[in-house]
Image (cartoon, rainbow, N blue to C red; front, side, top):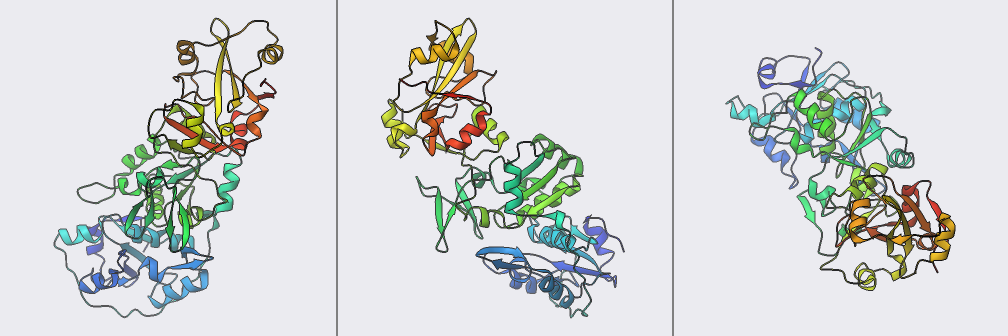
Length: 453
């Protein structure tokens, strides 16, 4: 029996007693009640596997990683899943447990696995039978054959971030508030950060909020019809992925909190016809806990943030509590020294011609040095109207990124003397905070010199 990746309730009802089929109840609950729910009623003939307790392990403090081959083999064989067994997995609502098992089996070289569309929710709503009997499966022989292309690691992602030409998309399937850096994943749902904090204490370890630089937000829960909890049609899934900027011919790596909802996102993209998919299994439980891995924290979108995301550069946004009236105030509220605040100053060279100079803190521009570098005798500081015309940003929000048209940019070496800097975000009252080396990288072949007096 060769299964498609998705089967409906009518199909399953007609194959409940097929001898080569194993049905798996893959429901999971953060309150650890999945076993009790299974005993209260499940699809006839189904065995129960809880992804957290039965299929995952912890390695070096990273939770909920897929079992290694020998342990996964033992679980499959004990539940009667062998090399020739067809498997249908189901859960409820967002299907994460079922999709997790679907990915895990395929990773270990067992592609004959399907997910039940609508899960137990649809099955029960249609009045189909439930059972409280737990079957006693006959042990089978399962042979793990790892498919390495289906799994991604932190090192894989770092390699992508370091290669501007890499045509690999990174997809964050967590809820919007986690993608924005306002909350982190917990088994009970999103845990919002205390005011002014960029991390929470999670089991005695610091878990940062944010996202992998350049990651595209594609929450898994939006792959379903909100009324029936059936998956959207493949055409709708394709349109959703395309609207987020994903191309069918590119490799896509997905992550979430602990690799579970990302399994669902991966399954949806598989149905949409995306052939080259991988799961970052360690997900945010690894990335958020490791202070050496780069992150982005941004709860709004501007041309600046879109540009930085496209470049896959790490940054975070800082929101001032009120109007900013001085550089000293900006530095104080950002918990920085004045020299860490980078000013983007625009000069007018001629009609419709401008140059932008990035300079650190309160340092003043040396007009003679600037004229000498530019090879001109006259230039003026651009007016507020001209700044808006040239950059698209109002004063107090100017940035060298996300400009409507390229502007010649000069970088004063004083900026590179700071490890972490802040600069305009494109929106007044909000600053981008990033490393100076990432700023330099994002500017590309920028002209660097001594432009301060």
